[in-house]
Image 1 (cartoon, each protein chain N blue to C red):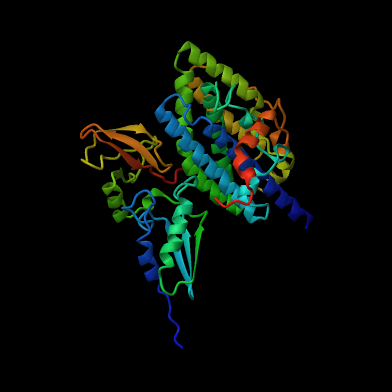
Image 2 (cartoon, rainbow over the protein chains, first blue to last red):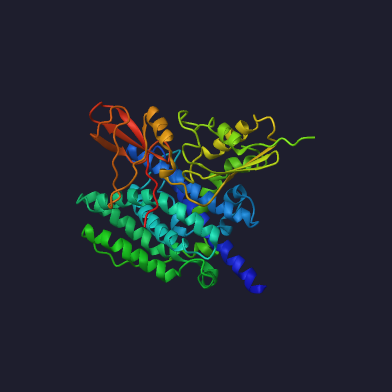
Length: 266
Length: 165
């Protein structure tokens, strides 16, 4: 009985992590709409953000099915401290606001998007053999779509970091230095991580992180850039509800319409 | 009193009239989105597969299915379910569906990808093979934007969605 409830808790926590990661990541992606470096990129990155939001929705629906609240409520009505996304994904795109003087950093977008999408691909690979059947089914579908996302961000990453252009390379390196110190938050499974692994829901943190390093190392090598992968969790573990002001601001913005009339039918 | 039964074939016939909301030359049947139809007395359940999870047209398609099936004189309740499995793949599109896409100016997805993930399709207007990929992403998640260097038309193509690995 107790084991069963612990297992259910682990399933719920994992689903929240997956949903909240994709949700805030898609939101940050959507803020680039109209601001991407050129029109084809505007189309591509918006399409990816929209599809990623679809991935968040499918995880929220899995939560809905096990009685954790409606997908809309889960997406819009939980406070920052109730969110489980990794902190690196909530970080603002740059100074300013998308409606006024956005001074967003495309290098940071490319680095974060590539790093996260690669991590997501490895996670999705692992989830395909999850003992929780609904998740394994979803993972297979997500994997097929993710193929295109990963290819896209890998191309940008290699093109900019390997361009030999002084400003591009320097900004990419700065973005990498900004991303890695908090990137362990992506691999963290939070306080119920052991239970998740024991129940066969997903592989362990260390295994997934190692596969990620193995996947990105040849990409760094291909452009002749060395990195030591000093991956940390400096700002804390988002899986346990620790977040920054950036998440609060984002939630206030994205739930503004929802909050104006929670009973409205759209 | 006689019991009038609904034949599943009648339901499939009605579903032929439900088109992709943006591509009115292709039905959801020909897109391979309908996995199963179950008739229980006057109630019909249609099990469907989403093409892309992030596709905003899914709820529109759901409403259109409900509306189409309620035209049947005996149908009482219509329930549309989107399944998690099996995954929709682009090889589910029928030959008729491919012709419908082409008529709309959209190249049907290629049957296969090369080992490196690249794929090739021809211009839906002039059949030329002299085309370039402008953007692998397009106006919807399932489409890409290409350009034909022979007839100088931009066109779209359905992305291949194939189980890899």
